[in-house]
Image 1 (cartoon, rainbow, N blue to C red):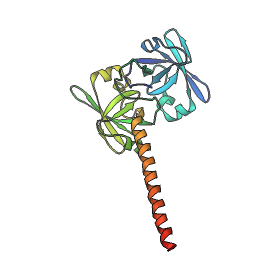
Image 2: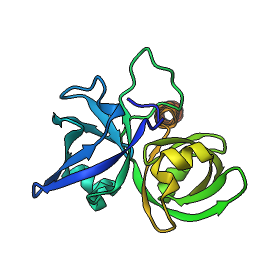
Image 3: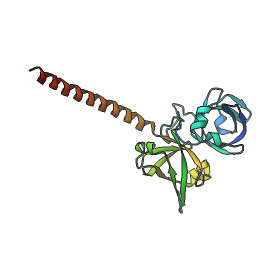
Image 4: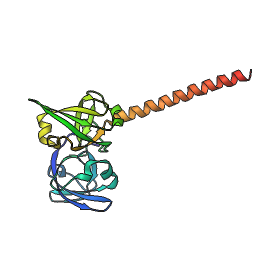
Length: 218
């Protein structure tokens, strides 16, 4: 689990094609402190497992499922990537609960600079719209952000200078792809409510059927 607070910008050092996967080597410093084999690191919002560490470079395997459903299929050597180590129990939850499981890939639609922040609009598949609310949370390329305005197929966020300087969101341009993860709490609420609605509907149907049966036997 992560919090969506990027710890550093890493650099893709090498990419090895494994036919149905890629082996990604990333140069980093901060996220390697205390990190061992098998630990999890979020790369642009994708939870990856450390398989080797060599000095200031660590390596992870990205499976076909991840390549098919995230922007990791287009990563190139030299790209900067957002990095965050998995959160520990003694750390502050500075962002929100992030799993590192990308729900969809969106696109930067527009950027609107202002004096103290920059408004960015990002497109998303319409099926994700039900999980977003104004002032709710969204993860974009691994960065925990607050939704300014949630639309049916896009949303806006305001990026402060710190976010622009310390994450890849300062580099993304209109048309660029970004990984999206909606708030997992919204998914749980949806499932609980759906189960409750199904139970209520089933009970109502059963009750109505019993009345019909009773009436027909009188």
